[in-house]
Image 1 (cartoon, rainbow, N blue to C red):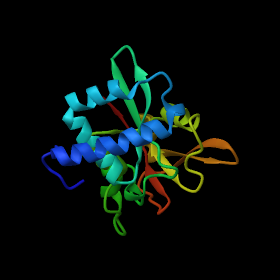
Image 2: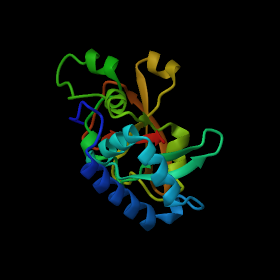
Image 3: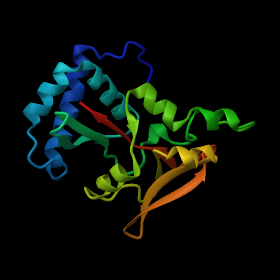
Image 4: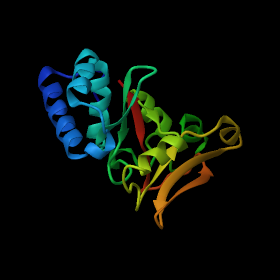
Length: 188
């Protein structure tokens, strides 16, 4: 999150691709029917996507391929870390919420961080899809995209998994907690 050029050196690319390949091979249940060679070709042709994936990786997201959209011809990556990414916790929902806090402001907001990284917050639907691939956020929670009508009223949504059930909750958008972060998605 400190590289303003938004590109990786060839050595950084090689290292990241090695990590992504190992995770891809270890977690085949997340992307059945998808071949690594095709994902690799797409990533090598889109170095800006590699930069975003690296941002996901260094902030603790452990990005992995979770699908392929045939309509748009894109591979879909989600943060697949067991808990909400460590480098993205203790943030309020968006810039408006950050500015509304008069004291004890967090360092950043989920929406701003995601935009800076070139990714999108998961929607509730995407979050539930992720939970079909494993058990995530058993101790943490993650902000998800919030409908405009809820946000206009000062609220924001987040999800977690407890009691083997995925829950959707609401909170004031300006709230932040050490155990709440956000998960992102990227299309390449």
